[in-house]
Length: 130
Image 1: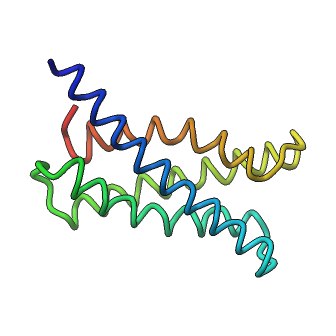
Image 2 (image 1 turned 180 degrees about the vertical axis):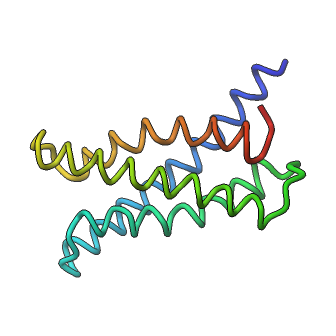
């Protein structure tokens, strides 16, 4: 049942992504509340740190059977996450500045959408499991 195994893979990916998101939110909180870093700097910095950790966890536990080298996979992942960070930061800025949305709610909304696309692109083109 390929659909069942793909769903299981997605749930695992989303679970790890959810845990990394909580770390991301904690990093943003520390940078904003304790280090007085502006949100448009805190969001991409936290995103970048979490993304690198996320890559190594999902590669080891979800996509262990990939034939792509660690370095090539990490490069693809980083390039994808640069685009993701730009989208997330832009979406957060729009929601906060023009939608008057709370920073953490805006970041959560952006994470949900970007996370789904990130899984699809990584599973299909990076780890080649879909």
